[in-house]
Image: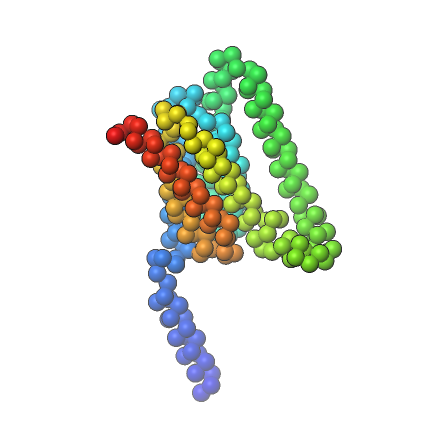
Length: 245
């Protein structure tokens, strides 16, 4: 009797959970929306490579997008629920943004801007070296900090979305995108990619909700996407106003 009562209770609990799962709190649904917006960003880079002049490529934004997609490809693979559609889109975006970077550098070299190109390549190499060093040293540093029993510092270091995890660094890379947008608020509208900023605006919108539905819940990811939505929508609005109004 007690066993059947327990079984009935579990069944009711499962039913309740199923009935309370709506589109608003479905991680899978918002994850798909986020992935589709991400695919839009990859598509924008491919479209720009086919249709736009390389002088329109923002090397600052392209470099940031390369770091961003590298981290998010990993994040999408380890987050719960796993999002392979999103991981695939970021791997594609790495290739697309890499091609954009190549086009822009080649254009600058052809126009005698060798000094600027060398500066860009040095910065790119330094960023790659720093990232590799952090990746290799991270686990050892984390173990040392946790083992030192430093109170709050050790607790933060051990957190599943803490600074030694991709759950922390993926959103931080997105802050670089928002920062690049905010630093470029007065960018000439003829140099704004309509396709790229449309994709970024939708990405910011969908991920603001998705970040609160995954495990571990990621408030940093939520806040940065609110900022990304605002900055990208600003550029998008300026572009639409200049070209179509």
